[in-house]
Amino acid sequence: MLHHAFTLLLTLALASSAGRAQGVQTKTAKTAIPGVEEHADTKLDTATLGGGCFWCVEAIYQDVRGVVNVVSGYSGGTAETADYETVCRGRTDHAEVVQATFDPKVIAYEEILEIFWATHDPTTKNRQGNDVGRQYRSVIFYHNDEQKAIAERSKAEVAPQLWKKRIVTEISPFTGFWVAEDYHQDYYNKVGVRNPYCTFVITPKVEKFRKAFKDKLKD
Image (cartoon, rainbow, N blue to C red; front, top):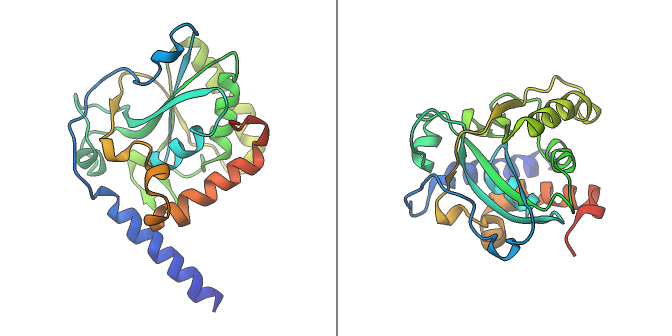
């Protein structure tokens, strides 16, 4: 009975993952992160992170105290443009990422990375669960030398405390960001239980995060 139940859940998750490409495509562009104008008087920082499906990563960082905006998109590829269809076909080498704009007076970049290590599997190369491909790789795109140093130290010292296997996360310079199509933005909050992928993949990750990082949750 338990095996049949697990098989059913896995089938639903696989089917949902395969169906992630459905929806109306919109033109993407290399652009700055929108939505932070109200924080113009505060010096904000940016973290660009890939940890599998950007729906999952976005849902987690939207809950983090000190993070003022999260945008899903594509980064790290060789092509001059990026959109969901070409990225999923492996034609651009972009990764699905989120850009999290945060207030470093409230949450440090080190803490942003601590959450990153704890909420995805950095030991699986080019995949997270049933999502397989270079677009799902574990990657940190650093924006300056300070972020690079912090990321390398965090990978060497923090991640191994959480994972016994070798950490395969790439640490690469940030070269550009393409905002994902509108239907990908704020996906978990908008779609929720209507997509089994949210129910069986994203919700467990969000619940795990909220339990482990109670002190870092927004009010």
